[in-house]
Length: 264
Figure (cartoon, rainbow, N blue to C red):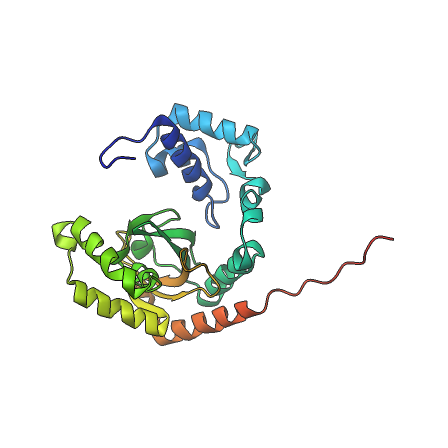
């Protein structure tokens, strides 16, 4: 799509479908039409029509009494067959749940979309501080250079290509977001050497994050996982790094599946 052009109606519909699916998480098991309208500032009539269509497609359930909606299994399974490794076999979801339960903090999975980092998945922890976490949810994107998770994802780009990527990011950045390429390169190299990053989460939040790259990912589509916290959470960053390392190390052994007897 050309820069500055308005998205087509088809693109708008696709975006709104994804928004609806991403609304649901551990703290939002159900949603009404108005919940979606308020979160994304969408028209009520078209939102109601969209939710009804998703029910017909088997992606949502609708409770006839409360008139609320919830995710159907098809919404989770529809893309699973095309995945590999820890995404397909459920280990990534298990890792996110385990880290949130162990720390009580929010856990996010990050990916790279072009020159932007994205919160691929967001799991709000039971003791997550409200102020720092305000406005955070799956799907958010921002330039790779603007936050700690973005630096970590940039570290997966080969040095021969990275300089050009940084110069393009700098050229497209707002004046108050421009950076010294040499300083950014040094920061990214530190991430590459350690496989970790500690710093600001970004995405217009006041939160901080400790994050690490996930092993076994395609180098062109890296994933990272991070534990997110606010200043008032008073966490030990070193303890969070150890917790993250231990959890990721456990990914090396896929969940044992009992062999089923073959049919006679």
